[in-house]
Image (tube, rainbow, N blue to C red):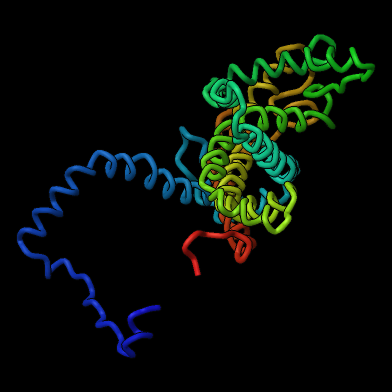
Amino acid sequence: MTVEATTGRKRPSRPAFRFRDLTREEWRNLRTGLLFISPWLIGFLCFQLYPMIASLYYSFTDFKILDTPQWVGLSNYTHMFQDPLFWKSLINTLYLTVIGTPAAVVVALCIALLLNTKGLRGIGIFRTVFFLPVIFPVVASSILWLWLLNPPYGLVNQLLAMVGIRGPGWFYDASWAKNGIILMTIWGAGDVVIIYLGALQGVSRSLYEAAEIDGAGPWTRFWNVTVPMISPAILFNLITQGIGAFQSFTQAYIVSSGISNAGSAAAVGGTQNSLLFYGLNLYNNAFRYFHMGYASALAWVLFIIITLATFGLFRASRGRVYYEGEE
């Protein structure tokens, strides 16, 4: 209960902050603090804020790097919505985000539940094994998966052939290429597993004991105790993994480049542009075609899409995410 409710009186409002009201000692402390954070502040201004403002300006220009930017207004944005490669890359990215992100989050949760089992021998070894893919270089792991999912010689298809299943073409088949990237995403979700483990170990044992006394079974305890208590971690993983999926680039670039070098007719973007994700399309326009103005427009549209998607997740989570201590 608040002070206002108990006393019936409102708290006196604090006066508005004004620099001219600072004392000499407060000014000295402010200068000292700014001096300590100046390396980060300079880096932020030079390498984050300025490039963002510059890219916003360039998105309204025809900019070829070495030429002087020519103002074209909304031309880049109108051209974008008429560009079939824009829609192709957006659909591919949405597929990876909508299908791949929930799959990675669910699989990581299942692994975390297994690793959280009490009395499991060698639990430290298992946790290390599941986290190892996180520290592998993305380029090396992409080349590894390019070999594992090779249609005639890859280990995955050979294992499937041993049980009488004909393996798909994976990255060489337009209908399976994105599923291969999703497999790579799930394999590298060790950091998500660690976050879930921390959340699971924070769930009070007394809640499970109370549920057991009420006759709740394993599934009921999981759905009505575990999921609500770790719901902030689920929301966090959905948001961070979703943002990462929207920005997916390295894996698709390495795999599609490897396919091209292997003799396929596919350019950077995979077979029939099946791996042309939004980030890869942006890269192609910026550093292959040198359409920096158009690439800047693509970047700002991606920023807006990610912002709206994140806002939508927060809105959808209202009333579904439990925060301890919240009334």
